[in-house]
Image (cartoon, rainbow, N blue to C red):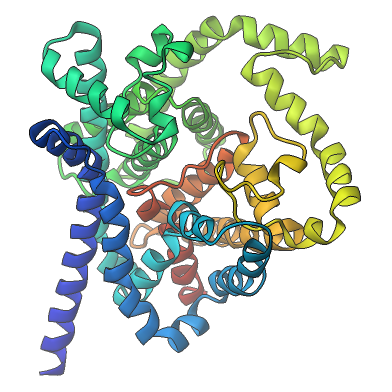
Length: 454
């Protein structure tokens, strides 16, 4: 009777997780359709946030003590947020920014807790990973369809529905696409995808691409289908036009290519040849194209770097400028607000900035500075230690299991590089969105799995 209950409980948990993910994935598309049909502006994805919190809050409260023992690093972040960040926010800013910060940045935590409680091992998690992969492929196909439709206008009414939704949206990341003062050709053809912002959509598709590349044989029996899905997710990533995700994934591919050249036995024999074939094809085509498209930016970057001039206006030049000015900004911050330097300025938004505008503003490294300004040096270390530590543990699992074919070393490889992709987002905007939070939640989850295998 007990075993039957556990089976039913697992099936219900899996159904809940799959359902919430799929609702989150399609919420923006549903919002567009409902807005077009009814003539009223819907933001169904906001209800998805509420759905996630309600669905997972019970597991969090009911299993609080158990969760505290399982993953103390997440609790360090929560404890710091509750005892330090929230009081500072209430003193300097506005309560509403706390809710917005949790929605935009910490949603992966309750999702991860739900996974930890209901999936005891990686075998239990595999059905959800399959849903995640199919969801990412759907997002890739949708981005491809949206881009082609924008260029050739096969379905004008669909393009019009998206344009109307953008015009009526309060999302500033959307509105700039319809703002005549900021309008250009690239903005016109950039697809908004299935997530609520371009960067998180690119991160979702890029992560699924890495998951398929290293572990696709677990989800697709046919090798032809496996190869096809790699290319679908890859082209979907390119068409998101998210520069930080595209650039980071190609750097990851280059690193994997070096591992292949060194003939390190890190990859499953089932998909090693496919990985090698794809990476050779991808790198041979993409890097020449990349240097051709960004030749002027690269030239400006090199000139500025060697001349010491950081005043360039290109993206690369601005990133270099932010990096070179980072320590100067830190010193300026410490001199102006020494207490907030250590413990942060609390959460903030453009409407409720607190003392944010008194600090040196970043031009490109938004994700890096947002975490730093919100949490301070102490909280910054606590937050990123979770992901750096998870990176270290995943690599140890890869090395430990690389000579065995009956383990999950390939999935640890996938999570390792997804973590790298997440950390690399410090060069631009946060990749944490609605459906992409389910991806971020896998990083601390596999940290828990790795400890069980120690």
